Image 1 (cartoon, rainbow, N blue to C red):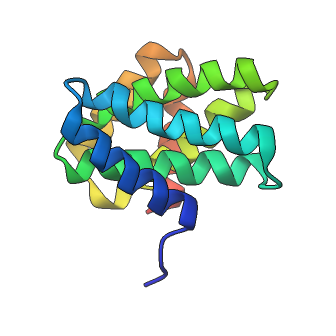
Image 2 (image 1 turned 120 degrees about the horizontal axis):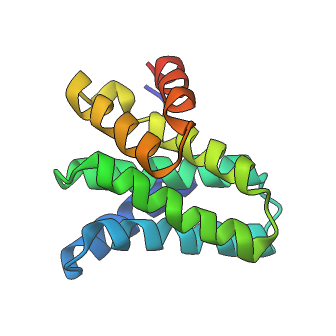
Image 3 (image 1 turned 60 degrees about the vertical axis):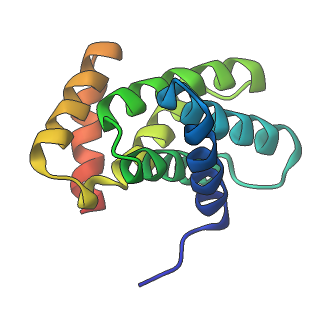
Length: 141
């Protein structure tokens, strides 16, 4: 089995630590990922897609490890990264696609019911995005 990408590992570890001290686990995990993405996009030579994808994967993995609702986490994460797109000049559609790609990477860890809930939550929050999320989950499995 391949080891985790360093960005994924950092976000996951930082998010798990933040979850312990926060009354709002979803906001804490999203904040950790969004802060790392914003910093990396402003300063680093990292490809934006890779940064977003691995940060989202790490944040979602942290939530799943802490037995939090992945649907709430996915929506909060996408909203936070939408804000990052605005402040970094990143195309919002690209940011959302990359975020969903990273979120979908946890699909192999989940049963069908939580995946369905994630798809519905994403569709309700971001009209039309549920179909793309389903496709990304299918690729991830």
